[in-house]
Image 1 (spheres, rainbow, N blue to C red):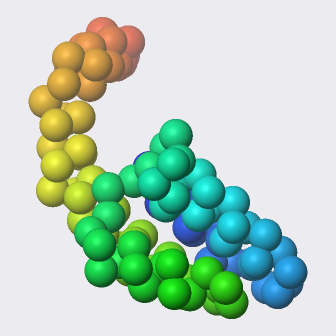
Image 2: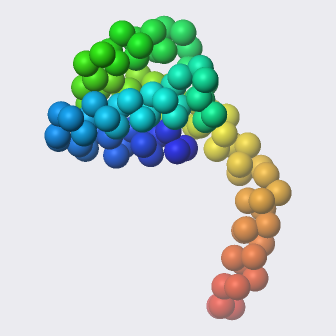
Length: 100
C-alpha cells in the first residue's frame, strides 16, 4: 500500500529535479533488491524500471503500480476482509452505532 501511495504522489509531481529525486527514493525504498520494503514485482517490470531509472519520468513506475494494485486486489484485500483485525473492527463499529 505504501508503494502504491508513493506512486500516486509521484505521478502528480511537475518539477523535473523533484521527479528524479522522488524516483530515486521510491526505487531505493521499494524496488531495489536490497530494499527493506521491497515489493513483489516480476522480472520484466523490474527490468523496465531499471532501464528507465537513469532518466525517470512520471510513468517510470506505472507498470509496477498496476502490478501491485492487482496483487492487492486479488490477494491482500480479500485476506484482510477475512482477518480477525477486520472482523473485530466491524464488531466494534456495529456496537458503537446508534440503535434504529
